[in-house]
Image 1 (cartoon, rainbow, N blue to C red):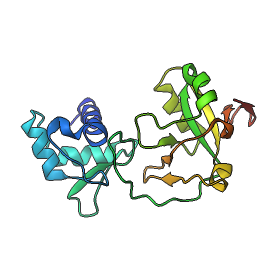
Image 2 (image 1 turned 45 degrees about the horizontal axis):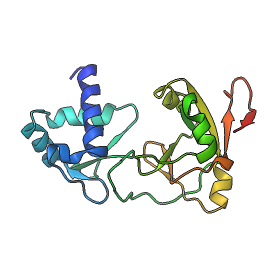
Image 3 (image 1 turned 30 degrees about the vertical axis):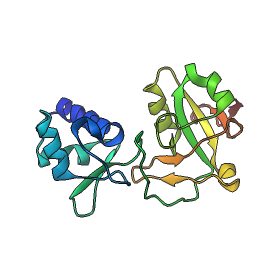
Image 4 (image 1 turned 90 degrees about the vertical axis):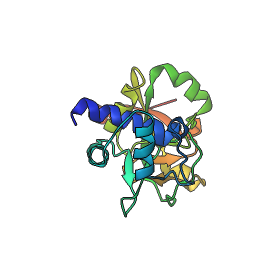
Length: 193
């Protein structure tokens, strides 16, 4: 499997395991899991033949660790990012003092008013470091990084979850907890939203 094929399979798995399992006749369980054999069979029935070794390769080599196998290797799921309703098995944990969110500058006005909302996903996704947030923001246009006062949010009752691939999840981030972050290499300062 070459890099292009692996990337295409990863995107297809994201679509199926996060958003549209019904596209190939699948149903995810309440925690987002589906049987590997069931997935491979459904893909084949819909004209996309993938071997178990190709699936193993994509799961093991995905740089963002988007997917996980169950301990026995019989089931697979996306780690986060679902638009279909699932019940995460993650336990709430204390977040670091600061988390980050990368987004596009074109949506800043809306964020200043509404804060960060989960939109079609089950949670708002946050990064533990500035550089990761920049990369996320670049996927959406000209990037801007927002600093999230996670410590204050947590102290005020917001629940945070951390996925195995180091993505932080929270239901929403009201605007009062957000500031624009400058690159750490240039200045630790922040600008109010």
